[in-house]
Length: 473
Image 1 (tube, one colour):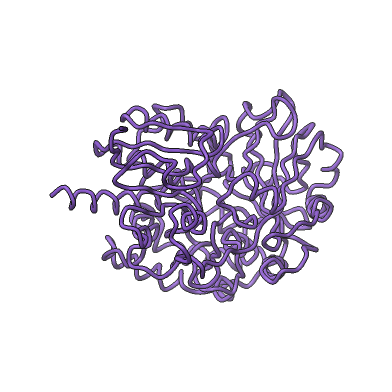
Image 2: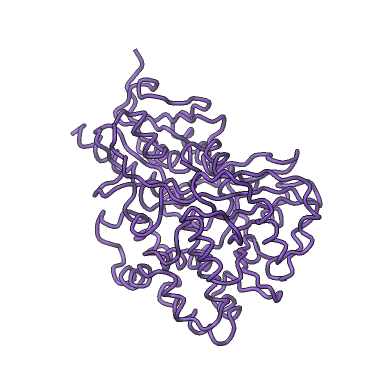
């Protein structure tokens, strides 16, 4: 008869790996089971196009990972993780060849907006610059799990954060600042007029000023492999190519922790309709490119940036998000793009480059947005198509096939519209617990939500640790 484990984790994405590491470091016996042939979930690296071109199928740039309170306690650099920083974290080009930039420096960022809005931006971020540690601890969590560590900063930030970014943008007179902030808020993959979109935009901006928007050398897989290496160093075991269809497939354990969608958890753990009200949000249409040279951006600042947002006005960006949320085909998409090979030569053969871009589409959409995506890129990088050697296209069906957590292609594993960024996957004081006392949820379907930061896994592990420790007593 197999021995009783303390915890079994289902799914080896960043949150599942984090939960497993946190428990193993506390001396608990932990094993993790992953359906794919490698760990990583949304943080993988694969040769999707041509040999020698290493692409990140999902997450690639990690402003929240480098500043994550969970990851900062882990010696991941001992297991191969090395962060690489571009000259500029992000650039937002405009048709006239200029760009707004999100720089490491508040001053450089502010000046890129022009004289009428530079002071407004400085005043917006001034109360929070230098306070990333406090903000990340207090906001990358379930908001009702206790008092904030820095209540004054928490309250000041919260008053701004709860606003729609469309309201925050009324402080600015020109389009550069408005478009850049709208683009940051669009990472929520939800309408920009929704509750809390200002908070998301501001967190991404402050992350750039505090720690940058880096990429891991070699690709996002390096972060996942470092977490798996740390887990093994503390006695944990990792099993890949192991699809879990029911709890009986797993060894006996005191706790089962799911880094899955809520609906998959309910099916595997036989919890019936426990998550029947979970809503999944819009999807994305993503293209990974192998290029014969760098992207020929018209704006020089875009050539220096690791991430480039394409959508010249806040109105265009808002319209693109509304279309995806309302089930309409994309026409003029807002694009989030990344060019990691400009700072990481391991990503492509010498002289060649990798690049990816995605725009927003309705959940489950099965159309082809390649042409509209590339027409949008060409507006700001004429001649781009001439440099394409190969492309790997993934719409919602392909994204869902790559990662079962992305229901209908929803890479956020649950809608982030309105209060759903806070109330995930349903209203509960401890959202990591389920109706089954031995079953927990640790995926980005729980607070603090989407992103590679490990904090959902961190708080799920704390919930498991407290319950198991109470049982032992």
